[in-house]
Length: 126
Image (cartoon, rainbow, N blue to C red; front, side, top):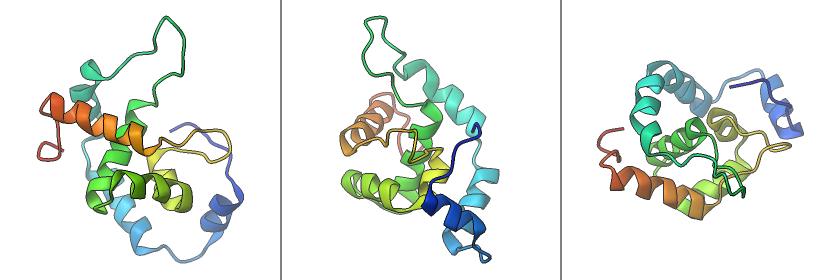
């Protein structure tokens, strides 16, 4: 992830002394998930920026991370969207900055899961 500007909540969390269970878990997942291999597997099916303009797709790495967060924490699409808004640790893991980045809504999260399912790249493979 590139360097991102921290929001106030992110700053509070970054300066906290004790790491939460969620932070420890996500730190471990950061190390053990085969990110490069998963991204290479999904990339051929992921939409590219359209020449017609419009809103560019979210980075594939962000959507993959959101998908995994959703699986690990058993969150519905609307609950995942809310968690990204409310939980700085999850935003950071997904590579989202509240100040400059848009947060994927529940429809975008659903569309990514459907893309994985359509190409047999769903939960059992990830």
